[in-house]
Amino acid sequence: MLDYDGKIVVKGSKAASELSFGLLAVGHYRLESTSKTSTHKVGDLLTTVSVVAPLKAPVGDGPVCLKAQLAFRFYRKNLSYTPEDAAHMIALAGVSYVQEALVWRLAGIEKIVDRNVKACAEAGLNVFVTPSSTPEKFQHPKTFGRPVKKFSKDLRDFYHHLQAVASKFPDNVKAWEIRGEPEGNGGYFLPHEMAAGNKVASLALKSINKNYLIGQGFHSDGYDYLEDELDNHVSDYIDLWFMHAHSNNYHLKKHIDDYAKRLSILGPVWGSEVSYGYYPFLTKDKVTTEVSIKDEKVMAQDICRFYARSIMSHESKAFYFRFFTHSQVKGKMWGMVRNSDLTTRPQYNAMAAASRLL
Image (tube, rainbow, N blue to C red; front, side):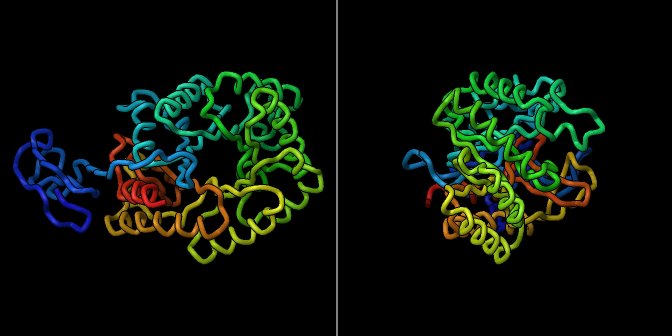
């Protein structure tokens, strides 16, 4: 077993399940194979161990938040872990809020989201929900752009469906992002369409819980779109502004500073999907996505810079992208746990350290 710096802390020839680690110090550890077998080469990663310090006080409403999107993972069958396992791990890291995706394009997703939100409630996590698509029965015809992303063809259907969904959620659901990235790949909405959807959603959700926070998401450079939407008086229905941004430290801070200055008179800004960018993964198999040990360490260091920058850049909360591993066909990868078994990368420890310091 190796610590974060590559120093051997435990060595033995027994099976991993039979090794005794003793009392490990706070940190991240890699258990590697020391002999060649039918399934492993010498040096192959067998599992990881994360040891975090106890929380000295309740997390409460802190700034350390996480884009968890449990729905995308638990839509899959035959996983070796449960939503309760994932929620417990996230809470142990000291996270205050998680984001959940209400992916209506996936059949049966509402029951899955109901369980995920309940698991988060039991773990003491606050949740904000993003309805990221439209139920098929309410969609526009297939010839109408991207009907899965557009709002219902009759906004009254959207209103009543949101009411029905929200009425089932426990009190830990605090906020809603009606659509993320509406002006780009996430939506293809015209500003007046997005304004109308926000108004309907706000009226529907606040009829269920007047304390819900309703927000609008944007890319970091969506200023012109924002100004067009404000011309439709959407700010009368919005409590929060969400921003997505993935870039290096300098450009990210500039985007957030500019964005926050434009919105400061309207309400608080949450960075609902923010990172310092992706890392290249080593394998072609998206299921077993791995990055180099060197990049894992840089990703962990990014967490510290990430929250220090967020506090200095006017964000009320910052949602790190992402809990589960997310990879794209161009070789881009994000994520602090492995999808196969929830084993951790060093970012998990870095987030736990940040939450205990802030």
